[in-house]
Image (cartoon, rainbow, N blue to C red; front, side):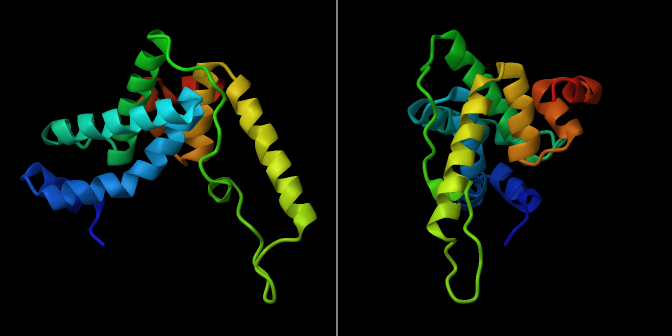
Length: 171
């Protein structure tokens, strides 16, 4: 599998297959980020599409001052903010796929957890989703980027145009 750096170089040279590979690699994380920030699936899918189109058009301008995923999150965040200021959707987010949020236990005989554990995991996950939706947008962005998407405080700061201390204070 080619690295992001290799794919970026190829995409910058006009290789559509490399661009498609980059898009396929990062689309799920951008969609998940959009779901957390925009609060509804339809808007998140619009944000994903607009983010990927913007990135495809601007790939030659990507300066590599950050990781490619950090750049995509910054684009997606900007688009989400535009959606909110335009009076974007306010419906509650619904998970696209429960398995994307909750992983079952891995046993030797039956890889699925017992039903009571599954229900408890679903209830906990739903409670967490509600709690995240109740956060102020600035706090939600930091939480999702750091704890869901796994970015460092420095990378979160790059996406949000904040210093590391400001990122930490929002947690």
